[in-house]
Structures are given as structure tokens and as C-alpha cells.
Length: 358
Image (cartoon, rainbow, N blue to C red; front, side, top):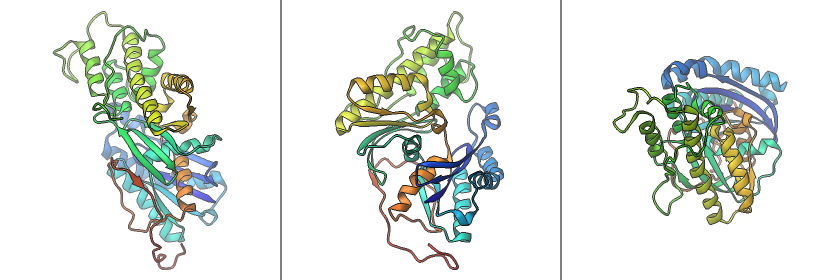
């Protein structure tokens, strides 16, 4: 089965062709980092317009790199949740247009879950049930995945996502955008114990995350208790590398502790990571070491599969299509991540579009 995956949930236009849910035939990503860098973050309107310009060339290149035409595909998978509304609409409309023109089956994919299932593309067998931590600029979510079709949201951030906290702290340190890689690099030169920043999390008894307080603690440490975001200068004598290392250690502490606690509660044997922050060196090191010490098999995707890409959409889309899940041309976009447990099931069959095949 050869599936085209289309991803446009935020600021990267991506398309890929994956065979049998595991073999990547092509993987094309058009990054928008240079467009958003002057603003210190992603501007939704700018992102949407860039997707409009990039989507057709990116899909065309993915097909050419795979050595296929549309006739050589067996299905189309597209991110339809969660993300920026304007960005999601570009990818979904492109996918629906292709499905209408070809009669190929179409399926909408949860972007956050796709990050977890990106691990299917690195040669490691996923052993369900498992716990998946998906951590990125927009999401910090902990799932219990019983199968590729059945997942329960165990916990999520109640305020800032981990990647957002990285970006905000990077801005305070004058490191630019995107902040995660820059903080990670600078932290290697610092003392992780130099500043004892708070280890914050959600309400007692939950598996939720919270990083707003940590971000504010960094602001006050750098600029004093009367500091306001976007105003003032950092105090003299503060060593940026120590701040970066101490902040990163506090954030990683929370991610590792909550994730392993969730895995123990769920009584699983495998823990997988996904999302852009899963490329962070310290998080990978701590999760691998402490997960193994606690008796869990920890699966870490290669850094190239941590950022947004079409291959992960095609991989999870393949599993859904194999199970008979289909979406019609009324497929809509959903910007928010639902907190309630969800089960993806094959819906009743719908009539095929006029002039096409299912």
C-alpha cells in the first residue's frame, strides 16, 4: 500500500509517500523558519499564505522523488487536527481535491498522534499498549495508545507547551527563533545546577504538565521581580549558558517524571517520544537512562522524524486505511486537541464521489 501524506498544521509544508506504513519512498519539507524568524514566532497569516504557495510544488516533488504518479497511489492521508486553522485548511483542501480527482480513499489524521507513530518509520517495532509523549512547540501531550486506532489522552499541558517555553526563554536570552535547538546548544556550555528553577506540573494526582511558572521564573531571574515580558534588559553578571542549562534541566525533569509515572500507572512496557522537542539532546539522554532503569523500553525517533513531516502522516494514515477508516469530501479541520479519550473507528461506508472509486 502506497499512501501520500500531506502535513500543513503549522509552519512547514510537507508531503511524503510511504509504502506499507514503514518504508519512506519520498519525504519533502518546505520550511518557513526564515519567514517567521523576524517575528520571534509563527505568524498564522504568513504561514497560511506560504502553504498556499508551497503545497502544489511540494506534493509534486514528493511524487517525483517516489517515482510515482497519482495513479500509483492507494490512498491519501492529511493532517486535519490540531493546528492553525488557515494552515490546516490548505493541506486538507489539497488532499480533498486530489481525492475527488482520482477517487482515491481519503483519511484525516491527528497530527499529535502521528508524531508518536513516526517511530514506525525507524525500524523499531511498536509494542501496544504503550505510552507516548508528544512534545513540541504547540503541544505537550501524554497518550496511552492501545493500538494505532485507539488512544486515550492521559495528560496535557494546562498552559504553555514545552516547545513554546523553549522559544520564550530563547527570546529572553537573545538566541532567536526557533528557540529549542538554540537553548539546547547553549545549555551544553552551562552548569545545570547553577539555578534551582521550580519543577512545575499540573494539579495533584493528574498527569498534566505546566510550564508557565517555569518560564516566569526564568524571566524574574534574568530581569528581577518587577520584570515584564518584552520589556527591560537582563541583569549584569547573569551567565546565559547557566540559565539555559538550568531551565532545560527543570523542564526535562518534569517531562521525564510525568511520562514514567504515566507508564507505571498504565502498566505498559514501552515508552515512545515524538515531536520537535523530542530532538532535544538532554531529554533523549534522561528519558533513555531513567526509562531503562525503571524497566521500560524507550523508543526515540531520529531527529529528522521529530519535526513536522508528511511521512508520519502517511504512516499513521496507512494503518487507518488498512482498518477501513475513510473520510468523505466533507472532511473538516479542528484546531484544538480534544482532552477526552478518543477511539478512531471505521464509520459506515459512504457512497463514492461521482465519477470516482473508493
